[in-house]
Amino acid sequence: MEPLFWFAVAAIFFIVALFKWYIFKPINKILLPPSPPKLPIIGNLHQIGSHPHRSLDALAQRYGPLMLLHFGKVRVLVVSSADAARQILKTHDLIFANRPKLTPLEKLFYGSKDVATSPYGEYWRQIKSICVLHLLSNRRIHSFRNVRAEEVGLMIKKIESLVSSSLPVNLSEVLYTLTNDVLCTVALGRKYSAGGEGVSKFRKLLGEAMELMGGFYVGDYISWLGWVCNFNGFNAKLEKTAKGIDDFLDGVVEEHEKRMSNCGEVEDDHHQDFVDVLLGIQKENTLGFPIDRVSIKAIIFNMFGAGTDTTYTLLEWAMTELLRHPKIMKEVQNEIREIVGDKSNVTEDDLDKFHYLKAVFKETLRIHPPIPILLPRQSTQDVKINGYDIPEGTQVYINYATIAKDRASWDQADEFRPERFLVNPSINFLGNDLQFIPFGAGRRICPGIEFTMRVNELALASLLNKFDWSQPCEEREEDMDITESTGATKHKKSALIALATPYFR
Image 1: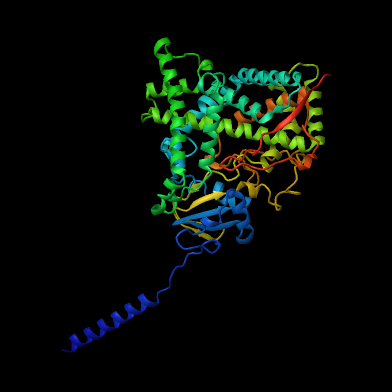
Image 2 (image 1 turned 60 degrees about the horizontal axis):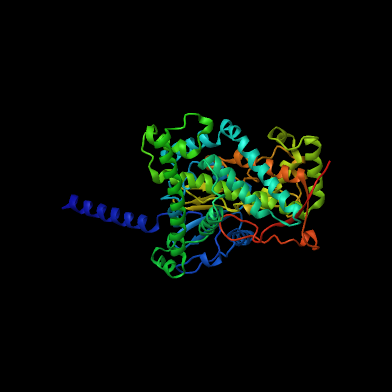
């Protein structure tokens, strides 16, 4: 009996000890970033207005540069400083290289089969490589210089015809047509603006797409409330816009397929447009996985749509700020006209000499970033950022608009002062300076920077070389309307109208 007794006593002590350890064991609490109070079910969604970058900026002023919000059931990390952005885009770039699945992006980009919104992985690496090699490499960009020169020349002639008729210039329309025609020619093989409603129809579709991408689809955050989008018109508009874009892209692809079947493939690389390249890759099947028609349309829309929208938006804001600051405009014109000299036109060989012009573009990208909140990312594992625990699956919004006006990084941050980039010309938009990331940084940085800036610099230099510009009314420059549109891309809400006077040497 004695051994049994001591066994029972030992068992009782073991059970008691186990019970006490279980009840009083230390709890490893995670330390989450500061977070504003949230409402039941919707979390912090009610605090996001029609201009999300401003709403997030206001919250960040209270809760700090790393702030955790709750959009329904989804954790959202909002990043509002260069130091915090460095942790996401540099230190832990691989962990945050993925994209979340968001309904508007999935619908408009064919299940996110494009470069910008596709999940991080082998498919993304392959199609990014295709885009960089066949459309955005230095060699290909150089091969398109005649296209850029021709389209800029046509833009100048159009303005000259308006001036001869004593008409003001709708620069918003002129700049959109220019960028649309350049992108159409190099990506799609021909311009689509000459067929009556062509450019205006696609411009409308593109504007609607950008507006939808900038909105919040409630079903992505509160799944059982997804039906709301059937009643507020969001789903209907999304379906209509996606179908309109798909019809347009189907026509483009079919046109190329028909031409290739009748005339054979275009052998000369310099005469191939991007659709030719994609169809050739589809035929050869050299990627290790098939690239289907859906993928081709998604990639085309990404390259063409995003390129057109952001490029003309940057030009529009640059001209807006120059009209608001006539002294700065005069300084840029003096630089351009001195370098161009007696030549009839600006050429791309001149562009590297336009230091003040480049500073104007940098300052415009700081004050008016076309995409103020970088495309969202999503963490693929638990990670610590600045001492805070960031759980796997957290969505990340980097509010570049706030970072670009952070007084810790920028002197007189709210003022348009291109000179700051002459004093410190080493600051660039290649993702190395985290206080200045209009094109993003890290693995998901925009691959089209050089292409975009070549078009922008040639266009703006030509406008400032050929004409003197002024506002069409007597209002003060500082009172000029700079209201932003809604949507993922921030255009000037009202059209930019200006008076042009030909410049004679």
